[in-house]
Image 1 (cartoon, one colour):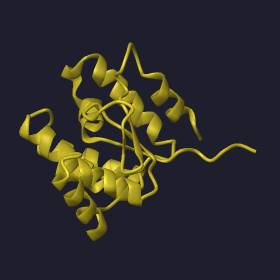
Image 2 (cartoon, rainbow, N blue to C red):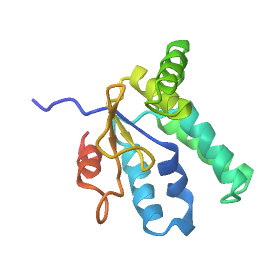
Image 3 (tube, rainbow, N blue to C red):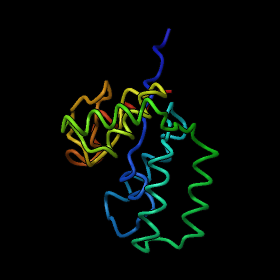
Image 4 (cartoon, helix red, strand yellow):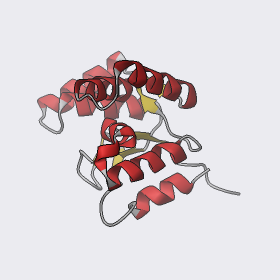
Length: 155
């Protein structure tokens, strides 16, 4: 009997790179991650989706109407984790203790409440465990990092 797939989430930076053609190799790898994650036990957080929209429209990576269409597609494709009052409290506690920024803490707490055990992110410390979630940097090394590749091969 096969073990259950490990539930994971994608940080905002992966979503942004996935549509930013100017990001070079990171674009290609992030696009592969998002595409393959749709067939895995991957949940997106409302926070990451909101940050994606704000970032790509502010930086003029895509027009607002296109960014909204992308977010709407992802809302249909992926299960979505919302931040609860408990997640806000956890993020404030982590920020007050200077373990992590409030916004990163909120994303992690919402993902943890949805049962995620891994966050794919370039912006947090590779291999760190924060609030029970392991951080995997997909760009650590050459090509797609092996731990992320294995995560995306789970079904």
